[in-house]
Image: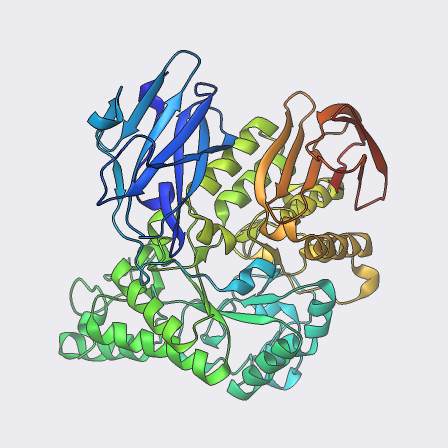
Length: 582
Ligand code: CA
């Protein structure tokens, strides 16, 4: 047994309560090394006694390139746990505890999960399980009211530049909610809608005012109310890392220098405030003068922004916040933010913007989940660019799942592109068959699939600002095949609970054929097999039929039936074909 590879810790993604009486634990070991892993556990005030402790056998839930991962759910009536792992390979059994390995449980210090406290339970709104998210860039989605268009507005369909406008607004969203409901969308996430001079509105002038080019608060209320009638939740964008240059407090600082009562709201080197040759104050990213960074540690700044967070929830009855550049704002701010949001609306959702491993923010005290760029990166490299094979793809996905607890994984915004990236179809070099396969997989993956507006009708675009083109509303200009494919995949997800709530287990990995198979299922739900042929070749594959009942597998997309013989099934996969098998 390779002891160096074995790892557990009694917190984070390795040990987290599912509810008052259940603790999920994970264990890592060298790939292929262990044949059996058990958790031996009891109340932490009762010492270990052979035969008295509970033994829970761990399930091997997956393997990455280097490691096997095991999971178990430990039940505890007292909510106070101590536990040891007993691990077996071909030759030996060994005990593993907090201070290392031992031949005997009596000389092995157990791991402790001292108490499952009610307050620390991570609660994500239940509605995320059925979520299909649609991201809208309001300036470019639909122009529902030409009366509010900015001066110099350009005809719909023009080339997006960093500073031009096409007149999209809130009314445009309201008018097209039926379209979104018909697509199967249950959540819309809007990039910022508060007053701001830019088309993207990430440099806020007034956090309490809807941008007049988008409409007013009554328009927003109407939009949210209609969305709710159609079963659609609405998420706003909270840009709290920085404000806009025109924000009243920053303007006061420019005017009054250090005498301004807002001086400490920002990080300014000295007076006077200058923007050239470089801004002498902290900004978003590198020297973006139009976005001064806010000092969220300052009690007045904090109060101001938390009031904003509460105000829009109460005023419009919207359903949560997506947090811009959330990883650069202090964690104490987010802890208070979470308290305010959940007190105001207990089933509101909080989604951070983090492009890397977001584990520190996903412990239940800050965000519910994040925009899943780890997923997006893997999807782009595997499906769109073809720069990684199926083994690497699988490893990346599994690592991202295991980096987080189950609660955070439920609420992921699983995107394949966004307003900050090239469009997926463009990355695919417009090979629609690659995109179709990726979308099917996206709809079969744990967490909430997120569709960037227009992807479903085949919109293309390079990086920002080109990825922010105006939506194509003329049906003859839309890729109707792709739109129908989206609808079909979404309906599959809705009709098969396992695709939404089931476990994620590896079924089949074929590196030479680039074929990937997973099984989504649980103790209570019927398992669903998903097979992906990410190659231009036809493959005939034989794979184990994990289903105990039934004699055939039926593809839910084309209806083809495959007979199970001797617990295996032979399946023919066409180029870039995906199957969803029940
Ligand atoms: Ca308009």
